[in-house]
Image: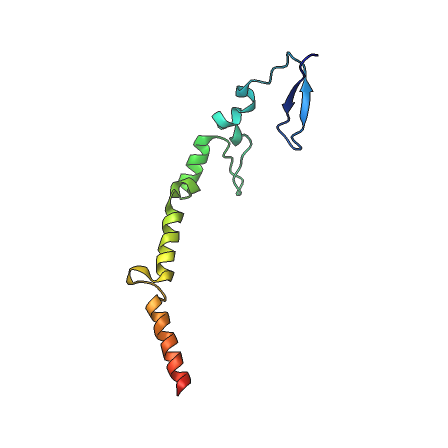
Length: 115
């Protein structure tokens, strides 16, 4: 009994297909080329119609309009979330409402209801 060989398709539904024993997959340099060069810029244009079909054109377009990409803000959203949590939880003496403020408000409401 000879061995059967299968490969899994890269696109949905990701089925397995039988291949011959001498089958060789395409070289990774062909299938992953977009990861290693500027192919993902091919035909790219901004929303105002300016061609940004290379890394250099894209950088110049962003620089000339004072724009940036999200990777320039690494860690910024995490720090902002921490500052918001500090503010709303009343840590470090700052914030909209602190634990003591809530306790004081409850105490005042209880006192008013007793009168």
